[in-house]
Image (cartoon, rainbow, N blue to C red; front, side, top):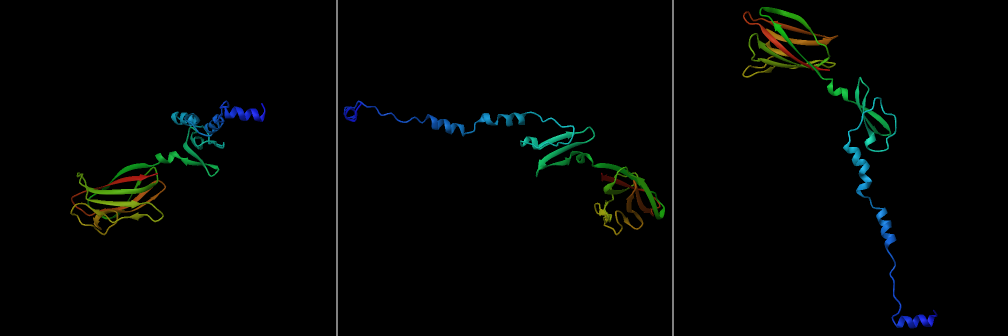
Length: 211
């Protein structure tokens, strides 16, 4: 068709104009958009329990889930986290290392001079709470706290009810009745005590916590 014939056909309305197709652009946009299918591997990983390892991990994780590993060697249960380009161990056994014990220490009547006593503890105490009461009674009279450190700390007794505080450390009303000067070494707790009463035995309950 010559240029003259093309112009005549256009004037007669015999030429149809066709718009460019946008299918290719739409397909290109769809490729760049994420769908739920892209996240299915992650979702399936979150739904299933993670299996533990039997030895410390040495591989380099490729996903967030791989950065968290549970290890059970048979003797220890540990949690490993990967960050700063290295595996870091967080010991789960420490959650179960807290131990406790209870001792009843008798303060016999007519103990008019300072005496030394001992009792065994199978772990290192970190805190001891003392509760003094009379023999045969469950009513506490005095409370006291002992903290084990490089310089062991004994609190002044904490009064119960309307009973006054006192000057002797740990538990006891005064220098006539007490249990104090606690020390711990080699599995043995050493203490001093006195009870000048001529009629009543006393008892100190020791609530012991440590690791």
